[in-house]
Image 1 (cartoon, rainbow, N blue to C red):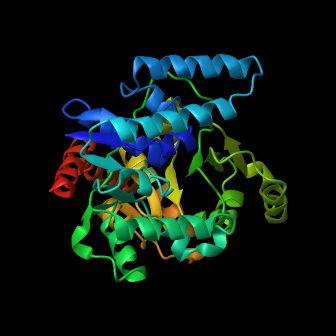
Image 2: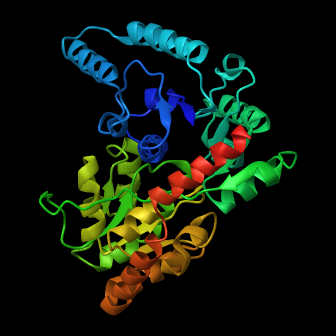
Length: 372
């Protein structure tokens, strides 16, 4: 099979779950199928570290990196060459299936009657539009249009499929296949990171539906009553002034730490934590759930959205927006080593069910269905 993998997500993300998903899937498919990524260059870390780039694309990446270090603007050159390569590939390369990597519909009039398979990662823009005021309309409108026109749709969880059909009941349910993510997290024991001895972990973006302020408020007394306990926020950028004021009001400014990380370091953040708390109001899948389980870190999360589907009995669940319940669940794990070990073992057993090799094979089967 000859597949064009649309480059849009690799142009937009340096890191990110979506670009990792496509890199993992297509690194495996490229061993058996013919994959063409019509890309001039990329700053995406996963793609650059894979075997998917051609020698010419690798040279282009190096050239752009050098130009940027010299202070030379590359934006117009990249845009011009990217458009040229994409249009040439669509016109001149004989392919079977087109795979868009996000929701820009720019390709629709170019692929003509070729089948395309769309992956839907979540329905967050539709369910929480107030959190995406700047670009919500275009993302939601394009997603709806592409779902309607797609030959087939891949949903990353049954919960996401359910949300699609609830919001857009006219979408044909029979053309939606559910394929779970795998887990890419590895622990490099040779890496040394300065981390506290006793901490609760929070990972990634803290805004809006991620429910970070609820999480901090719920654990305020726990932090104050345990002198050596802190919260470590991995990634998500430095604390804003608003967040700092919020911590001051709670009297816990010295109990919350923000640390950046390199990709190969994140596993140690999970491994050394007493527990990982994922208080998000909604996730289409929730890759950190798999990461935490794979690293032997017990996970506390809400009993809603896709979480029960992904974590199953390895999740230590709290009632959504019930701060007392969240506090009690965290304190149980902190005080009971045998309970922590029980959930670590459950997590390791559960995460073994999520495999990129299986996901790649299932994606290939969907692409074959689209071709038929």
